[in-house]
Length: 404
Image (cartoon, rainbow, N blue to C red):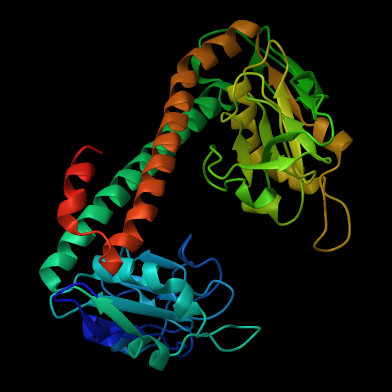
């Protein structure tokens, strides 16, 4: 143990608030509409829909508290609260005390998380109790050094978050442009329009089904036994375009794809959840493969590959795709022929070219940010255990972080 480091109970470094089940869905004690955070479903990725409740006011978190799932399949997922929440069943909240910041407590828990989760009881709904958390033993430095550790790690996390937010903004810009051009026909309002089975469309455009825009599951040659990049279904993102988790695996079968293709989940519940990706992580003409439970959409020669991705994210198209699903409950899949029957107004090639010219720099910036985040995440994940354990001291890494 490093000099001046001591063993503490987690409750000596952090106030721990354990949630409770709300009493009905009336109004909360103050009537101020504080939303209820009730776990564990999807906790850590999105907050549940706010509702009204009656609950002990001592069970209300503050902005910046570390919200922690203590029950269910998502036990251990964490997120900093972006507003006050009523802490419901399955959720705990940590708030640093005695000179220790909540951020430091979060990194401390990150370091100990696997061991903490080994204390869970229950098979269907693994559970961490108040006693487990409050009496959990940790070795820690003094508050001053802990703040330096938190600052180093949070500088990396802040940069990662900044890149994620920029990626989200860039993708929203691309989707807004897609809708403005290809749904609302905004830039073409001053031109002539003609009647079609879809209503008025710009003159020179034609109503075509999806098969006129894309190659579905294009043929590619990848001999069995070849070691190639592999993307499993769980790696497909829900809200963003870029894939971060790419494995390497021996090819024995599956969907094959290349840069510029769009991957579109075809099975319940992945399609409904939004799993879609733009392939931008391969080298040159490299071929990758993945699950047969997603479709590969490749733009035809005159069509913008970025337009194809935006179409795949467009809500109306996704709803149509969901309507084509068949199969038994829980195993429904999109069928190829109905999927390809989706009708749209097809513009002239120069419109697709203009769209590509505008959005391509945005897509490239998203990929650059994703690559940088992979580097930052690797650095953060390597430093965290060394700093938290005292193996590496603050003075040894401050110069390194200043260059990031």
